[in-house]
Length: 325
Ligand SMILES: Nc1nc2c(ncn2[C@@H]2O[C@H](COP(=O)(O)OP(=O)(O)OP(=O)(O)O)[C@@H](O)[C@H]2O)c(=O)[nH]1
Ligand SMILES: [Mg+2]
Image (cartoon, rainbow, N blue to C red):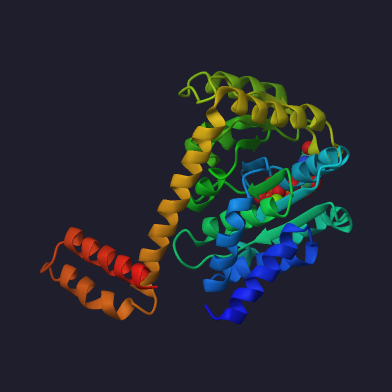
C-alpha cells in the first residue's frame, strides 16, 4: 500500500476512535467494499476492539426483530449507552424492501447521534457477508459503541457464523411454534442464550412459551450451564423490553463470572480466522489467480489429480503469495 493510502487509513482510524460518526460511516463503507484498504483499516482497529457487548438478534422473517431492536435501543439509550446496530440482510438486492423497512422502523432513532444504524448486504466471495459483518462490529467497537446489536434472519450458514460474533444470542419466535420450529433450524435454537416469544399479544403465546421451555430441556447443555430464559414481548408496544434488557445484561455478567466469555472469544477467533483463510482460498480460485487454478481443476475433473492433492497445491499457492506480500 502506498504511503498516501496508509496515511489515509491512519487518519480515518484515528477519527473513528475519537468517536467521529462520519469517520465510522466512511469506515463501514470501506469495509463493505472490501479490498486492501478495508483490510488495513480493520487490521489497525482490531487491537482497539473487544470492549462492546455484542448482542445477536435472530429469528424467522417478520418475527419482529427490527421492532425489538428498536425498543431495546431505546431502553439502553435511556441509560446513556452509545449504541451500534447492524442489520444484516443478504437478500436485500432481491427484495429491496427489507432494508427500507428496517430503515423506516428505526428511522426516529437515526436522529440521535448516540445511535448508529447500518445495514449490511455485502455478498460475493464465500463467507464475505459474515467477514464484512465481523469487521463492521470491530469498527463500531473501536468507535466506542456498546452495546452493539446485530440483527439477522437465521437461515444460511453465513448468518449462523454471524451469530458466533455475538456474546449473547437472542432468538425471536412468535406464537404458533409448531410451524416456527420447522422454519427455525435446530442449530439456531441451540445457539440461543435467550428466547423471546414476540407478538405475545397474539393467541397461543403461553402455549408457545411452554413448548419452547420443554424443548430446551432436551438440547445439550450450554457452556454457561443454564437453561436459556424464555421471555414474552410485545415489541410493537414496547412491552417486556425491560426484562429482556436485564436478561441480556445478566447473561454477559454470567459469561464473565464463569469464564465462558474467554471461551466464546476464542471460538469467535477460530471462526473468523478459518473464514478468512477460506475466503482467501476462494478468492485465489475465482479471482486473478483463477487462471492458475483452472488447469488444476481440469486435472481433478479428468481424475488425473485427486481433490486432496489439488487442495494442498492451492493452499501452498496462497501461502506463497501471502508470504511474498
Ligand atoms: N402484533 C404484533 N406485531 C408486531 C410486534 N412486533 C412487531 N410486529 C409487527 O411485525 C411486522 C414485522 O416486524 P419487523 O420488526 O420488521 O420484523 P423483522 O423480524 O425485523 O422482519 P425481517 O427483518 O424482514 O425479517 C411489522 O409489521 C411489525 O409492526 C408485536 O409485538 N405484536
Ligand atoms: Mg428486520
